[in-house]
Length: 465
Image (cartoon, rainbow, N blue to C red):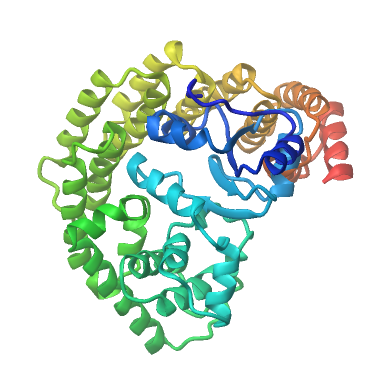
């Protein structure tokens, strides 16, 4: 964490009480030490003097996913994805959730907008969808900069997001906020036929679906064709652009070219951190699979990775950069170089157990079962923090059952260890822990003749999930 910021931790209820007594908003950071996007936020946003200056008038609270009771608090406050960034009013009302993928300058602007907001995002959303009053320009901007990816049903249930965001975008007056809200709507709907529910009940005709997809393609082309607007929405474009293009129907070729052009501009933007520029180069590599320009792109990935790694030494930034570099190298077909980078990173990493999971995934792609299980086991044993250990252990045992269900000694040893991790966690059955244990319970139920430890673990999970 940036040392210039006096982060509070521990008792979140006490922090809210203090905020109310001194009249300060609360800035909540929910994250984990091993999480690459969390490390990017620390390096590119929390380290900014402008951010530290804002925090002097707020109560910044760091809720680490491995802190005692953190997963239970996360369930209470609807936090799941690492990182989630939430601004609360002094009276405890949630003002908004801020996107972690924004560059530092844009994030500071979004934070300032939220601090000056006269209404919470929930109040503005209700008024906009209900038509009860016109929204001020700042309210539309606040909604457009809301982190819908980390909403967790706080404002909208996930199943309602595509339709609600489309209505919101249509109601918003033309401008930057409208363009971004339309992108949010497209991201939420990508891969779905408009009007479908998650259960798959088609409520729109094929002609209506085609019209909606065509209109979305037109809007996306307008954003990509406007250098300023594309830059303002870089976070959505680089993270979701490929999926949006895949959903664009007959306009796919045109959109691939436009997205590649935008990615080249992002990659050449010296104002962006090297990690963000590498993400843009990785996007170009992914577009090759959709027919994008291919000449020299793979080598560009390799050279950009090398140049970035040579320059970035700050631990948080490097952790995030290595994660991006490994993904980019794999996309470019340099799997051996990606694996070598992971191996070389372990000794100097503050969270080597995270990269061990990536090494397990690399071994799995080679169909190396012993290597896969060996890295998953090492990651579990090296993991730090009660929630992380529990989740890493569940991942390991699930993989053992999937790949070597006949290896009862290994299953028994893992089951016994996970039972110890569960007893050491004060919130073993909450939030992210619960998700992993539910998955593990399903796998244990598939064992024909579970050993005593596996059977005991299965009974324990059945009784508590």
